[in-house]
Image 1 (cartoon, rainbow, N blue to C red):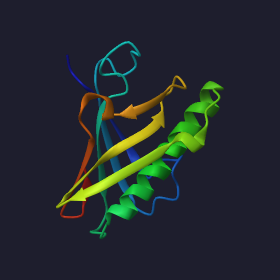
Image 2: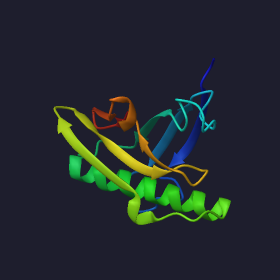
Image 3: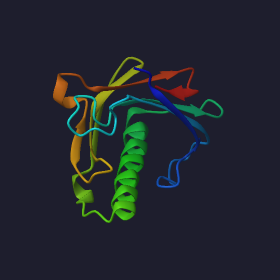
Image 4: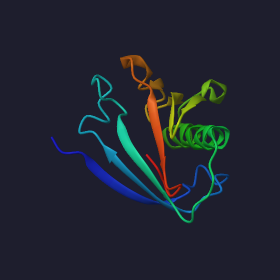
Length: 134
């Protein structure tokens, strides 16, 4: 089954505090919106950032927190859902050029989810030439 790509301007409207400009590419799994699927809310994302900003683990964690908190709030407003934004969190650890961690966020159904933490994996971000995040 193919993944479904989307491209957007970056930063997204729900995260205007992120100081980078560029493009966001997202690839959604075919069962992304199926809450019963093991791949629910699974995707691969790239932030193609203009220039070569130096990004620390602390900055990336803050940016991801703003992104997912804003996304959760946007889902809540669009779907008239009740969410507790204090439960959104991001925890990252840097390992060389990799950043590993867990993200607790809300899906578009209002369900609190842990991104990739439940399968023994953690979310991985890689900086390449400080131009894009994977």
